[in-house]
Length: 154
Ligand SMILES: [Zn+2]
Image 1: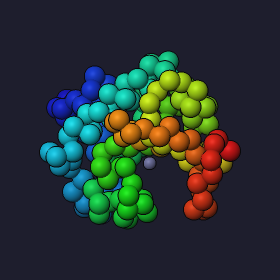
Image 2: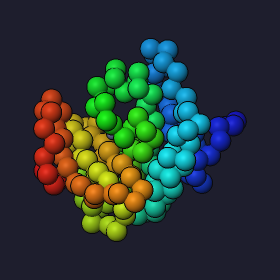
Image 3: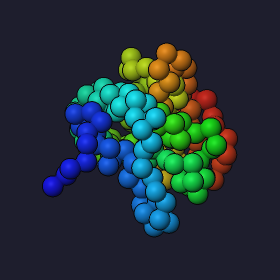
Image 4: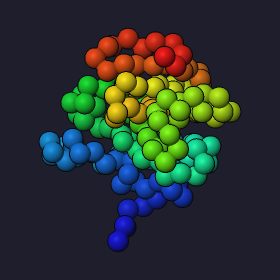
């Protein structure tokens, strides 16, 4: 039975904080109460994304990261994951990460950064972050093994 509280109709706190890396390294990745509002807002945006992607199940491959976890996964110190304002998602029933990125970039959804990550790998994913009231709607591409963020979808 899933007893994890819901952050929004389709997204639970467990999905938002789950991390195989944190489990393996015994890092406590629980969400601080001070970030609950950010997490809820992020999941409300995910509901809109889920609808845009044909109501197909969205897989959160990384949501909240405690600073210790963010460091071991190589996330930037200013990562929006560390403030519960960003998620990495896949939606295999809808399409590839590139198709998802293109669809969201063309939609009217308000986001801060949309990043097509590692598009040449089978594990490609989409990073999307939300800064309520300050969304820049930046669209970027980042390739595996390359630290550069390229403007647009490459
Ligand atoms: Zn990310």
